[in-house]
Length: 399
Image 1 (cartoon, rainbow, N blue to C red):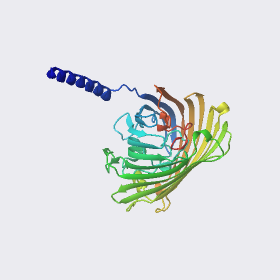
Image 2 (image 1 turned 180 degrees about the horizontal axis):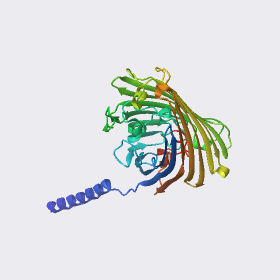
Image 3 (image 1 turned 135 degrees about the horizontal axis):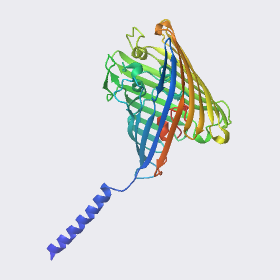
Image 4 (image 1 turned 90 degrees about the vertical axis):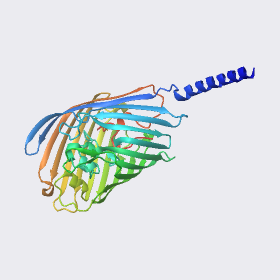
């Protein structure tokens, strides 16, 4: 009798354990799915002594995001994947570049991210057609990227372990990151690694919440420190960025965006012939943008902007460059934009001399769609991409 009782009790325990394991191992919790991206196609006309025309598909992208709540409704986990089209002559080894692949966890006061995404080497998004149109002015250069202009993706994206803390005021945040910038060989014809941590970054910022974003005055202010550990010495860069609302009329908004970068430089830079040399040299850069948004009934119909940039390599004579880039976007529909931009760049003889005129005109189609929406988000998935109309100003979105 005792044997039968023991068998029965054991069977019940095994059945209970099996059910518990099944519930523990495979609970049915479907994620929130976000799909986003842009199709960006422009015709470009360039005059830099020789004239050239091209059809430019670069920076078109497709994004997929997934998120779930953790074991409560205040903390969440997320993963994002994204591909973009590099320039035709890019040194990256594929017609599609994996520029987003990261996971993380977050809550009302914190967020931790691990993986590949935009590097924190700029503070402000300027209203240029593409985020690399004024790259040498707006971002801290990659001192390990010998491929230069042919691989601008290596100046924009890298591996991160980043933590961000949002203060209870809802306006202040602080972040720290270990960064793995892509390193290429000295000939610039291939990628060596993008896995080794070779940089560090700190950022402290003030960002006005979305609900009162259109009050006149300071909207965003941030300072940053970026260190790259090069064999010739540490490359320290200091960043300061700010965005101002010049009026308090959200239907006809005027904004001023400013950013300055001081780069201390590494030892032994003897020339500015290559872009990697310029990234390693001591320099000062300033960018300013004035933009107007026509927004009747709080729906943007068109935006006009003027962006100006200046950079000086302080340890070299006759080594200053500057650029001006007026841009215009007319919204044909929600997410369908007619865009145009003119960019003029001038370089002193120490940088090779000469000037360049470039005209862009084309169309942008943007999409942002959510399935099974139930997780509160800080930003739209499109904040992972540069957009000359939406989400310009602070690099970070709202809280």
